[in-house]
Image (cartoon, rainbow, N blue to C red; front, side):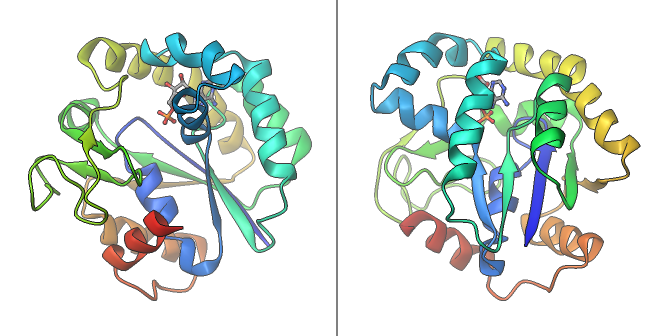
Length: 226
Ligand code: AMP
């Protein structure tokens, strides 16, 4: 069984890279997606986190830890998981290390200037959740998802203001969590600037995983229809 954490600033491609590991039966667990699902479905958790998320701020540790524990007790990850968006600070990292043994931490490295360019041009399919980038990966029909025809929307927290908060939190709070993992020699740092397939190839080489069996498009399509 393989258990990984993927870390990196917003827009560094954590979701895309995690989904590209699906052919190895590694389940992608995105804490942000779990919260977004709760907001969209008007659950009690959704009501508690909506405003915090829209402002780009971090949800409280107790809430995050309970959501992560609940998700990981669902045993749909017999061959392993890759968790994205967690831990975001030192306390969450300590909680995680106490509870789970991990095989590696992937750090996607991207300069802040590139983060701004990517995040402010990011669009998300409201129906299947696939990400588009209006510069590098624009949809064939403007405003519509290539895979399911769903409407493309901007994430509520992909604004200049929220991005500033998220970048600041990443540097102030998430870097210390990474340092903790670094001390345990778990961390593999990968340049996130190249094309997704190149980044994926590097991740697999560095972690000693088999090469990709499918193209990124196929992996995306499967992730979207799952
Ligand atoms: P993401 O999709 O990972 O960018 O997460 C979207 C939002 O969900 C973040 O801006 C936070 O408000 C919240 N969130 C996700 N993961 C965490 C976490 N580990 N700790 C605190 N807040 C989180």
